[in-house]
Structure formats: structure tokens, C-alpha cells
Image (tube, rainbow, N blue to C red; front, side):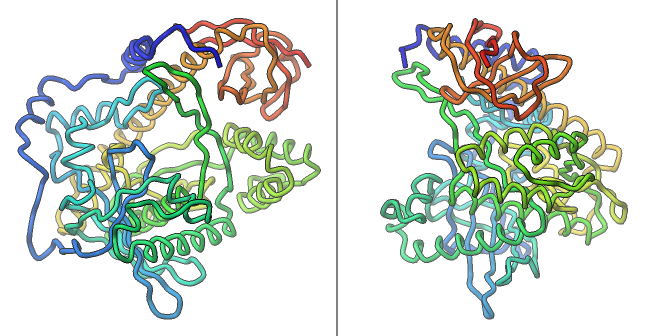
Length: 489
């Protein structure tokens, strides 16, 4: 691919402007910076209500470049094939009290924003990558979600408590996945810690049990491709797909189980909570039509189990096209949202995960709803009134949903500008594409090399989400992130 003429500095300026345009704070306010300077070190408490679990073989698995580590995990085999899974979550609330300037900044943005130019962390890096991070070799306060997973993958007894932990090995998805798949030797951090290899194989086995049961219950099997920026010498050279693997599944299914445990814990204590909800898709008819185009039938009404059975069959029958099908389904499912759940009252579930009880609790360095949930759980454990009333939680749910979508717009805008930068030297060339959006506002298509989305400005009549199409690149606008295509056939 030709070397771009623009540097990453251009994209950083675009990213900052996009943050401001979407009502997000790209910089730490002065009062929050002053509070940060006054924090001497990581929060630490001792007492009868805080357990000491520093001796356990905790580890983290995340992206190669991730430094804001939110969770650790450890497995302890039990009788009859069961396994006790412990997930430790960074105790962010211990360092950031409610209504302080740092809390206000986190509440304003509600999420870290990951753009192709730079990351805008919800919490400043001194916190998220150090003081509130479950960093390797460091004692840290945590909230532990302790659950028993049976041989059939069902989650049984569970408990939530506070604890002091130590991360024994900071691991990365790709190298762990290659080892689990038998494609590479174990990463050095695994061999350096006695027992860590067996520990991870146990965790992997349990995660696959959880996965199998979740799929049987209708949790959707999807394989979407997220664009990951690739830099060389400070210059953007590509946008490549960040694909799933076995290590990512390990963390994914542990977190799904842990978030379900947290939701049920708060309900059992008679506490209101924030839930993550995804209603049944409004465009189910189009999903039915996509299945019909593959000679498969789906029920007339939304049915997660039937949809997942179709997805599993298509993944086996046409693996090369499965990412495109997954993207079309994701677009048609719509966006999730945060909602208030009052104890004893019904609440929308999560269609994509086939779950009725689902909270966000496992990423408090990166998501404000998880900080809220952490505070609710602490109050429940202490037997004191919750820090937020129902009206507060309802308003926060709406605000977090809005800001999450604004953050997604920023990430999408910068990704489009990055793609326009990469494609500027390829005007006139043709690409195979997939229709990813079709409405009165326009028709959108995605190409794979580089992974980029643009608008179809000619020949879009009659197209709908999921249709394959051949397109020609007409023009790019880096500043506005515009990529214009015309349909060739």
C-alpha cells in the first residue's frame, strides 16, 4: 500500500474536534487534574470485610497494548466436574469518590473513546493504567465475583465481596490464543509462573462450557470485524480487522457470566440497578429475508435460538462470508441501551445474549456504568442505602446511552477519516463490498482491504443491508471522513 502523505497528527486534530462536536471532553478539566495530583498512591484498605487473596494465581488477558487492566481471573476445580471461577474487578470507586471532579469528568464522557488516532481515556492514565489498574505484580483492591460453573456450563452458587489481589501474569490475547490452539509455545509470562499453564487450560475449558450453554440458550454467534489502526514510523499504513480468538472468548464468556451474577446479586438484595438491554430487533423481517436468501427459514416473530441455529449453520457452510453476514445481523439488531431496573419489576433483557439479567460491572476503568454498579454493590454489601435514587439511575441510564452513542460516532468519524487517508491514492479502483446501511439518509457499503465503510452515491436503488455489491471508489475527503462509491454491478 502506498505510504500516506499525512501523519497521525492530522487525525489527532480531527479526533479532538469530533469529541467536542459530540459533547465529549477530550481534556481533563483543571479541577480534576488538581484532584489527580493530590492522589498519593493506589487505594488500600484492610478489615474483616476485605479478604486477602494475594496468593491465588490471578492473571489478566487483554490486547497486546492494553494498559488499563480492569479484571483478573482464576479457576479452582471442584468435585463432580464443577469449577469455581473468580473474577476480580478493579476497585475504581476506592480512588474516585462520587461527585468529585474526577468523577464528574468520568460521568460527563461515561466511556473511554478508542479512535484510530488516539485514546481518550475516561479516567486519566495515571489512574486507569496505574493506580486503579490491576497491574502485574501490584497489590490492588478489587471487587470479586465468585461463581461456581457446573460441568454443563450452568452458573450455580455465587458470591460477591471485596478483596486484595495481585496480578501474577499480564497476558495478551493473540499469544495466549496461539498457545491454546497449539500453534505456538506458551508465552514467557505463562512459563515464568509455576502452575499458570494448567490454570489457563482450566479457565479455557470452563469458558468453552459457558460458550456452549450460552449458544444452546440462544446467545448469538457473531464474528464482526473491528478496524484496528496499524502505524509504522508514526504514519498510518493500514486498517486491519481485529478478529476474535479463543483467548478473547475466554474473557468474553467469563465477563458475561460475571455480569449476570452481579445483576442477580443486586436484585436479590432488593436494590435498583442499571441493566444493559437490547430489545428484540424491529427489522426482524429483513433478518428473515437474509436467511431466506441462504435457503433457510426463520420464524415470523423474533426468536434468538432460531437465529443462532441459523448463524451456526452458516458459519460452517460459508466461513469466508460469515463476517459479512454477522455485520448485517448486527446492523439489523440495533444498538443496546442502559435502563433502570427496579427490584421485583420487569425489565427489558438482552436479545443478543439471550439473557434477562445483565449488568455492566467488569470494566470500571473504561465505562462509567460499571463504576455506578460497583458503588451499588458496595452499598448492598454494607447494608446501607444506595448512592443513587431511582430518578438518578434513570437519568444516568439515559445519559450513558447517549454518550456511548456519541463516543461511537467519534470512533466512526475518525475511522472514516483514517480510511479516507489510506484510500486517497486509490480513486478509480474497484472493490467487492457489502451493504451495511440502507435508509432514507443513504446507502452505505463496507470494503475489506483496508477495512472501511463509505457511502454509495450512485446505483443504490433496490439495495438493502446484507447485499453484496461491486463498487468503484469515486472520491475521498479526509477532513470530513467521506468516502464515495458508485455501484459497478
